[in-house]
Amino acid sequence: MNATKKGLLASLIAATLLGGCGGAEDIPANNGGVTPPDNGGGDSSLLLFGVGATASTTPRIQSEKDNWDVQAVTATPVDLTSISAVLINNAGSNDTADVQVKGNGDGTFMLKSDAPLNLSKYASGFIEFQLRAKSPVPEVLNASIDNEYPNRSSLPIASAVKGGGNWETLTLPINCMKPFSGATAINLASVGTPFHLASKEAFDYEITNVKYKLTTTETSVVDPVTCEAAGGGNPDTGGDTGSGVNQAPALAATDAALYYSGDKSLATDISADYPMNGFGGALADAEQIVTADFPGNGGVFLGTDSANSDLSAYQAGAMTLDVKVTSYGASPNIQIRMDGTAGPDYGTFFTMDSTKVPADDSWYRCTLPVASLVPAANTNSVQKALYMAGAWDSMAGLKFAFTNVALKSVVPADFDANSPCQKIAL
Image (cartoon, rainbow, N blue to C red; front, side, top):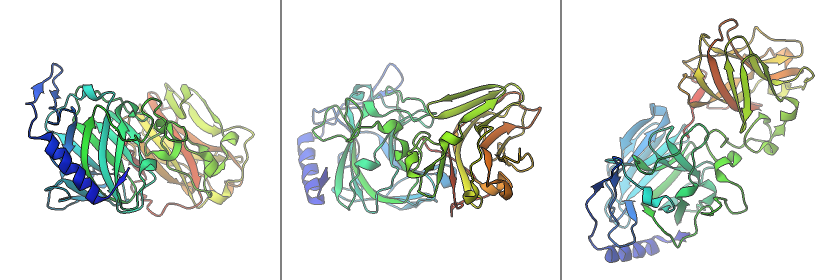
């Protein structure tokens, strides 16, 4: 819903007049959480941020490029590497956050509670807030209820934001907020961060009036019963609509999709030529994620003995993939390579160790120059487009997972050879 600032101001004044000054004292819940007060208007809504906020929450920002540093947002501008923000006056005093995500890594605006909140009564309710996009809407924008990753339930909302500089009301069914792959579902009985809005792309916006509601007269961003967006499709696994694993970014026409959870039709789809195979250990291929667990020597790869595609168009480009390492076991690293039909190309591989991807059971998005994976002369006939294993005779206890493997014809402009893998904010 779009609203002019004048209309928004009028509605806020009306709400304030109707709401009065009520609000019960916080009552400790049996589970250790705090039961939030009603909003004072008898509608049992909980206003976290905005005019007349009743919850003890504070606005903060978090920056991926500052080692996930979190800073409070006040009337004095705060500037981090990936995000900046300041409180401004809109319909009240310091009732709105003016936020700039810079596009060089995950930038998150959040509302943190002074004590864990018991939000159980809103399990079939809604999160509602007003947002004004001051720049183009990013392809990926995720709203979440968070207790610090991996305890996080999320909903991609980018497609629901119209943009254009007008105020919009966005209404999210809480029952449709689910954990992305690798995360765990939030427990509403004890919530530390009841609102969390994140994007990796550049995005300037203002946000206000964030509240929890039992019911709404607004049209929600997805159907509250089916959790499907307009036109069908579940946003929790909706391909290129999110930033997490199985929420892979959109591919381009010049890319090649190998093993990808997003829309492979946007690129050259060569996945049929390079199916998942392997030997040794326990290998699983489920929900578009490959998991490998090696008690000894083994390997996992995308390819077959008969595969021989010409991938020379990507020899000056990069491979992108998402990786999660549970344990390196006895291996000092994971060796990643491509094999030409003239291979195996044992001598050319990318070394992934704990300095690049820690064994913390978290997902990392990696960019690997193809030149580091295979000799250029062998890219015109590739048998294994991806091969992953530990150091030979040292693989006991090695366990990792991967997904979203693609090839790009050029190395991305923001590639940093010293930091080729970035933790994914799910």
